[in-house]
Amino acid sequence: MTATLQRKGAGLLVLLLGAGVFLNYVDRGAIGIAAPLMTSELKLDPKAFGLVLSAFFWIYSPAQLMVGWLVDRFSVYGLMALGVLLWAASTLLMGVVGGFVSLLVLRTMLGIGETVAFPGGSKIITRHVPPERRGMANAALALGIALGPAAGTLAGGLILASFGWRAIFVAFGLITLLWLAPWHFTTRKLVDTKSVEARVPVAAVISRWSLWSMAIAQFACTYVFYFLLGWLPLFLTKSRGLPIREMTVIATLGYLAQAVAAFGFGAWSDRWTRSGRSEAAIRRGMMFGGQLAAAAAVFALPYAHTAAELTVLLCIAGAATGALSLNTYAIAQMFSGTRAVGTWVGVQNAAGNISGIVGPIVTGIIVADAGFTAACWATAAVAWAGALWWIWGVPPIREIALD
Figure (tube, rainbow, N blue to C red):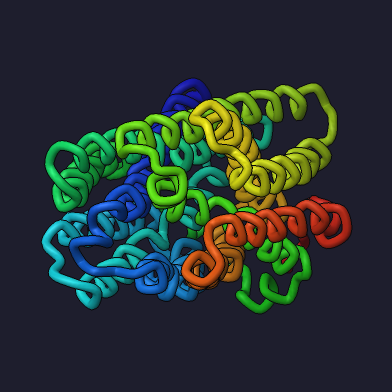
């Protein structure tokens, strides 16, 4: 295969990975869009809703450990397809739930299906994409993280206003199933190279401080993102009294800012790396700055009352999240190298996404007992601590010798 064909093939794989992550975040964020009507119909108070949000991560986080190990040893392309099939079916079935228990079970199943996205995506990127194009490849995933909630919020809000909350889950689940066809035709001729990649023992990966430092860093950045993804529609409608359509527009603009920032930061980091300057320096700097900006924006949310003020702050938070989502996995790929990236990202995701278990429950308790202002302050404090962690906690960024 010529170099041009290899680049085209890699580009198509990355495009489909980005589309998969896009659908991943459309589906996991659907519950936040449905919340203004769903919580009333199913009689879910803030604490119960926090538990439902958290349920996604009860299996999602620990299952990352197994899935990361699997993608380093079996067909990552087949595992991606199986994961998408499971999470699409879980999303669709949420449209017919009858109460708290069935919703809790399906959120858990959704979490199991979505475990493969980032270990699998990182494995494919390190296998098919060279370092000087790593920024844009990860920007494709980061664009999916941003545009998924943006499209989900816009489309879901319109569906919610016109057809009710159940139609959101049915429509999103059916659309996700369509992704399987192009993925099958693109990957059916690809053969995993595990036969020529020496396997790295799990113990060699989990014994490295670099891995655990990244897990802590990921906890801090995802805590903020999951707060916005799960609680923003309720904050805008209940605390600020915005109608559903206006909430939809404002929230969507924040996610669009995240997408634009992810694309811009990805292109910038690749140009920086091609010029011979330190890739590690630019990525660490973006993580530090992103955490600071996210902390400032979320802290200020309780003091914003007009639509314009809320939009500006959410666009700042979105741009910050664009930098964070781009670099979290790019840095993991730099540390781990090709052979161990599945295991590395699996462990990092498992520990880092504990924020998704803890955060919604803590936020639900704070909102119920002290209101949204206190919840914003607590979230901003986590983001601020994450910025400091990039100064003192994360060691020099370079590939770790795992033999």
